[in-house]
Length: 65
Image (cartoon, rainbow, N blue to C red):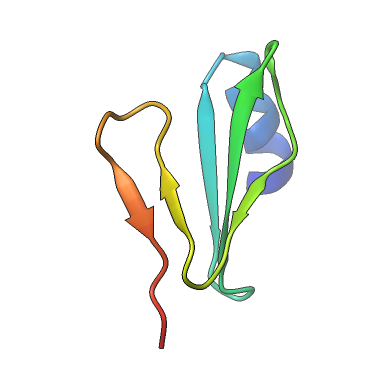
């Protein structure tokens, strides 16, 4: 649902950045719009850091166990 319907809705309404947290897969997929469409996700795994494109100064680092 989130990766299909909601992603399409967010894309249509111009939401510039969409993060999908998949706890089962232990990852975060970050989608960013280019030319009105989301490109392939940037996949955040262990030891990765991502800077939010839409919130200045927001940096998210994955937790390692």
